[in-house]
Length: 297
View 1: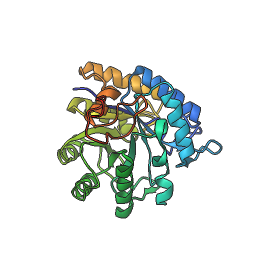
View 2: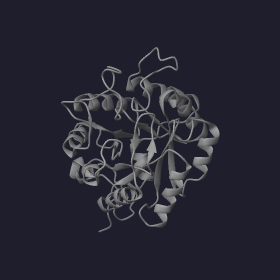
View 3: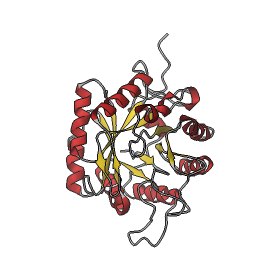
């Protein structure tokens, strides 16, 4: 079974003071994604930063610059934009990147399925906000990247399926190891995977020092992996070696090869998730065609 490799190069927390390797400027992010794409990744989950301050931003203009830069060399790569509620609370701001169109249209947008706490901050995702974001993506033909930090969020995804706000197939990131969420162990991961709605693909993410063990767990259990400096800036548990995104992607390839699980190509993911084929066509298929097939005359 092929392995989904979901690269999260930047996130909202790492700064240049924490690690010189985190890409902040548009050109830095594009360069890191290019290097990872050459090694082999399935999709990229993008966060935008203000070019002057380095602070997280939801401006469509900056997301457009990121997507334009990436598609200059990877017209097939699946691109997800963050719609996070960790910094921004207003719907109009959070939904802004979904308005990008043409060659700048994202294939996916993140949808965290509930509010939750981190160690020093909170991500606010009220039921009305989650439903409005899901409806906006459905209207725009953009696939939600469903983020679940505990079992309750998976149950809420099923509720949204029943309401018609989420339609299969689904892609889930199951995030383990956050202080206020499901912990990074086999039982927690197994329960979450068991409870996923039908027609779901899934990846596991490990927060902080949990990244490597959770990556290995996912590879052993047939799931995908989420990897990158958003989740952990260190290569080792002892925090003696700062990582680069390229280091983390190389390590995933080594581990995947050891268990004979080749990396899923963007084209394979597009086919499984009923996305357009890329190369100028992005987002969800409008009429149920398999990715790459011509529209019926």
